[in-house]
Image (tube, rainbow, N blue to C red; front, top):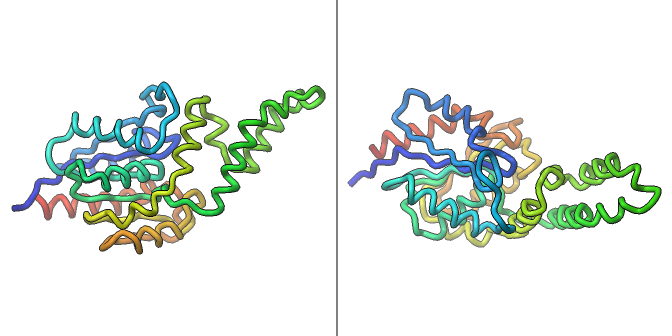
Length: 243
């Protein structure tokens, strides 16, 4: 028996919102695909959580959202941080996810993340350091330099709750979960991605049995936007085969 798979739930990346999928929505205009693009807590129009969250907290919230808005099998698409949540949801096995689409997904932890963790720690303590008499007048400029050096722009913009949330979700390595994924999976990645390096795509392709890697030369982190037409083509193809 063939399943109707016309709904796609799209989870945006850190700092993004439902608007991140405007290009994909336009690419699917006129089709029978039903696209759901919720703002994740702390982004867009969705209030931030009352306490720092980890990946499981985001997965819990998303699962509740899906159960409320989706009936039957659906496709799950996650970009960056949204991919991290999607991996967690898929391996839980509690939702009828028919296909997983990972776009420049976060979730692979590397030794380089030590530098980022140190940077976040410095950013947390930087306020005290920069409050020293004589240094205080340099505070705005010095903070920007500090954050730029450790590449934590997202951290600089976030509230205290979201700063701690960023640390917690970035700390978790989801690589052990990849082998547990048992559904058709497509991986979209740009070879010029500097946020989630292309090497992560190869790891996911190797660890997720039967997965397909769609690589795009010169494309950076916003593969879900820059390659919306290619992603839309895959979605409509899958939907036509299952409908």
